[in-house]
Length: 116
Length: 116
Image (cartoon, rainbow over all chains, first blue to last red; front, side, top):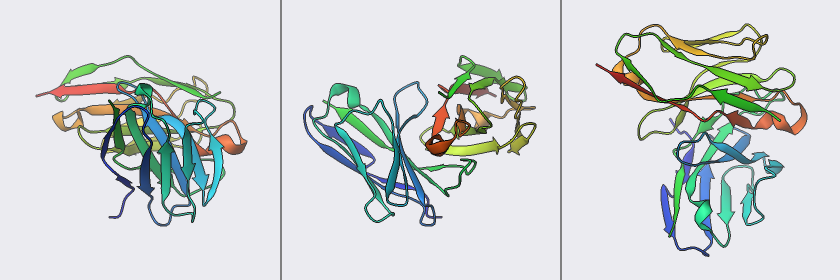
């Protein structure tokens, strides 16, 4: 079963450094999503792609965050000039895309980011 | 915008007790509704879903009915097991039209602990 794969599982970095995470979705899924989850909270939407097009980005997302999905397969999420508040679990999910949003999203195990 | 409210946790039950976790939502139109579960040390997994009013989603003995008149999607199980101990998230997708159909909006999660 080739589910959603995220790398790395853990990332520890110093404040001010740049970090990049990778997500490999389920191969036949054309939609890919990024979420952020902090302790005791539900995941919070960051952005999503349909194929290679980035269709929506959260208004709460700082300009320091950028995501790409260049060939419509894997995706990367980059955080520039990291801050303490960026410490969280970053989740990737994928799904088949259709208008109503009724297709379930399949989640990876996440990348836990810790800022020193 | 869309929002999801879950009952305050944590919930502690004895094995074979009846479980209810309340979930209410705010959304325009007709969103799809989901329950996700996160077992200790694992990623988010879809538990069940319902895509239109009066639909009942069910899986592993859990059930939830899409009630549009009360904007609710309460999770129930008749007899819980120790292995059901996990964090449960209610979520919705769609309902607002346009590009909002892609993302999930989650509740804050409810921690369930089941004792033998």
